[in-house]
Amino acid sequence: MKSNCFINDDYLNYVKSISPKTNEKRTLFRAFWVGGFICCIGQVFRIILQKFCNLEGDELSAFVSLIMIFLGSFLTGLGVYDRIGKYAGGGSIVPITGFANSVVSPSIEFKTEGYVYGTAAKMFTVAGPIIVFGIASSVLVGLVYYVYYAIFGI
Image (tube, rainbow, N blue to C red):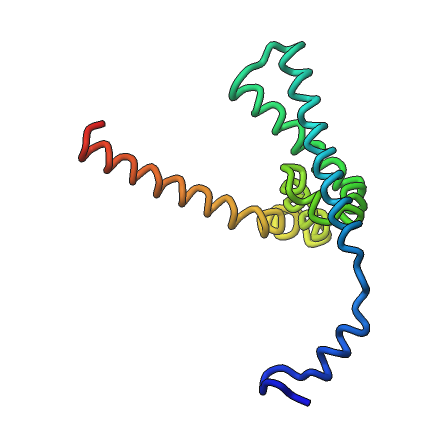
């Protein structure tokens, strides 16, 4: 029986019957604790760099980000981050290591196509739009601030 000309109820019932059942509480718990643990690792690096290297402010943030991006990329190269992602779901995607994983994964997958058309080109399939949007929006915000301060002189 069709309730809508675009949706077939029989098909929806079939998809529902063969779809794996998920335990939402378990999935949310895993995502929460793994994402939190990744952030705690970043905090440990922050404390170590602050205490032993006397870094502060932007330098400290940059070094912690650099270390976390390296760890995410390295674990992706070893195939470990994919297993973490399968276990934790969204909890592994949210931190900065998840972004590193999303940049490195396509480059590893397409390395057989060569360094230029495979690794280099596919590396920016996910990161490219994000970088372009970030740059374009920062230019737009900069122009708004420039015009505002030029007009009001504050």
